[in-house]
Length: 165
Image (cartoon, rainbow, N blue to C red; front, top):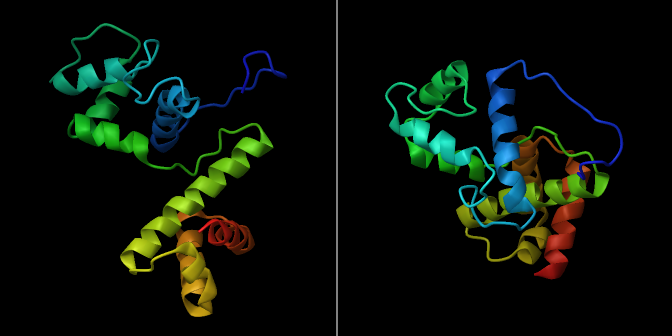
């Protein structure tokens, strides 16, 4: 959201999973805002420092990454490619504070999962998928398992995608 929009909100980072979700969210913000095309292109991002630490066998770099977080990074990612790929994954953590952004985010998550489903099942279009009840139901169940979203919301998104195909 905007810097001075509403009251300041903070949330405690208590688990490794949430920490990594926060890292991904922060690094992806400039990409989602169409300011840059890669997390590494934003000049004020810590992503470059994270990438440098992937080369260090022990923390030699000076910067914002604490020794504890550095250790977690080394345990979680074997190399730079894994770290970069991690940023391309959708995340179920909710950091979104504007309803319209959440709706768009959910739509993109469902679309991504439906693309995976249609590719794996050799289905040529969302329109075709939506027209075959058995396949539609299986696709909705697949998306529900992957995203945790309600079936009705997924079905509505699929109808929108089918109309656009």
